[in-house]
Image (cartoon, rainbow, N blue to C red):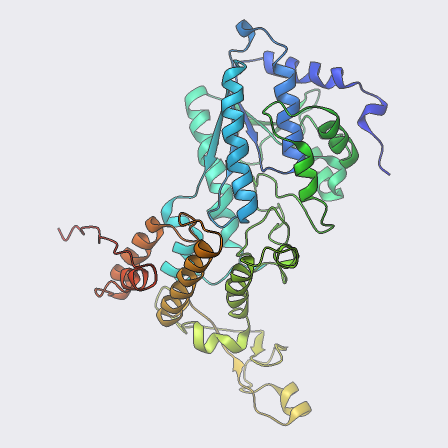
Length: 426
């Protein structure tokens, strides 16, 4: 059992430190909130500390930010939105200088626009394009806006040294001597403050369960989310060193970086049968990462129109053995073991084919309609109408799709006709 921060400090000491840092300058605070235990603990500590200050001293703005990737786990997405709304409401009632901000990727950077519009392959450990597009860029833009407005800013994160050795090392790397602040890894005019860095997981839970939530949520409901042993928190992502959290409750349901979406299966077993639809859609994307599927779902040419031949490490389409000898046409392992000629993949595959993109868009919309009916929620969307518009624009400009097939598919499945945006033909 890890040591408790409260062996050497009182809770009032933590509050005093937070107030001291808040009152020490005019730099705005930006708090990263993911809806998990650590970020909830962070916001609650800050809230309770600042609530003891007089209105005259509460002059510095506090921005609570969360990232909505648009492919979040549905339960978590709803929880975060609800939490932000309650924070905004109760913060105003208590005269705190607090505002909440739900950050979304630009429409051209959303998961479905990149994957179906441009044909980006489902993310892998080696090509995790989603992290930048869906999370990091959103937070970066917000931070840059506030730095531009105020000159400098302080970002508060619910990071703890006891989470891992690498996290401990990273936090120490950017620490400023004789200061409670650390340097930001990217922005010179931005600083990091981590009030719960010395908390253990037990400290976090003890604080949450022994102190009333000030924006009127029940922290025991949060505890229930963690009852699954596989549950893990997805922090506000500020750089690519943060690991993928797609396997836990706080990740994206589309995540193909992990091998299995255990949280989806657990919820299905617990009666959330509608999530089978999400699991099936995610599994189909995962299967496109199998080299044997590339011939059917991936173009041979890259997006630049060129075929990129491999100069080393060609892969077998059946056994996935990596062969260093690029002169070989067939896999020597399969030939020796099974006496079959299996071709080696001698090129780096390009984007998804238009055939696959159209077919998957239709399956995605079929899944959306099914879930809307099963949950009796006609407003639930797996893909936004704005994304359909952007996908169609890309298909038209890059693929010559003047038949507006994305619109046709949408109307076929949903019965709703989307009006084509007028193009500037100039």
